[in-house]
Length: 228
Image 1 (cartoon, helix red, strand yellow):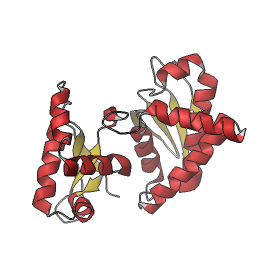
Image 2 (cartoon, rainbow, N blue to C red):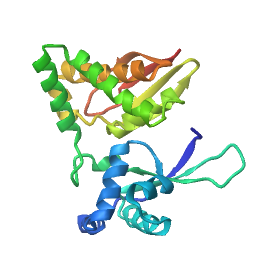
Image 3 (cartoon, helix red, strand yellow):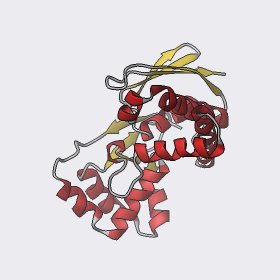
Image 4 (tube, helix red, strand yellow):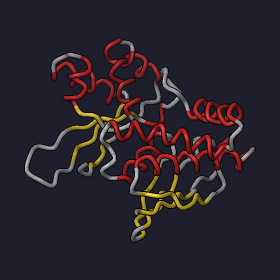
C-alpha cells in the first residue's frame, strides 16, 4: 500500500456537533463501518457498502470529518494518477458513540484468560491471531510493520515509528489501559505483548522481540519489532 499523509481536523469540544453528525442513520452506519474497518477506506468502498452515489457519500463524509469523528487522508502516489482520499476513524472516540472502548476490550481478553485458564499473554496471542486473519482478509499485510502500527493506533496507543535497520521500534505515546496497568502492569502488559505477538505471527514477515515497559501514566513504552 502506498504511504499516506494525514489531515486530521481538530475534534470540537461541543458533543452536540458530534451528536448531530451521527443523528442521521446512514451517516452513523458509515461511521461505524470506518471505525470497525480499522484501516483507511476510500469513497468507492463506502459507495459499494451504502449503495449510495459518490456525491451522497462525500457529503456524509464531509459532515463526519467536520465533526472530528473521521480523519481525511490523502494518498501519496509513487506512480501517475490522481491520489485517493482515504478516511479513518478518530481513535480518540473509542468507547464513545456505540464503539467498543479499550477497557471493554481488555476486560474481555482477561476474562477469556480466566475462562480458558491460560496466561494473559497467551490469551492476547490468540486474540492477535484472530485479528490478523481480518487484516489479511482486508489485504493490508503488504507492509507488515505498517499493519502492526495501524493496529496499535486503532487500539489507542498513538504509536510513533522509528526505523532501526531490520528492527523497528513503535514508541507508544499513550497507554489506553493506563488505570489498569497502574494497578497490575504485569497482567495488562503481558496481554498487550501477547496481542502484538499474535498479530505479528498471523500476518507473517515480522516478529515482536519485546515490549519495553514504561510508567503507564507517562506512556512511552516501546514495542520492538524485527522484520524477517
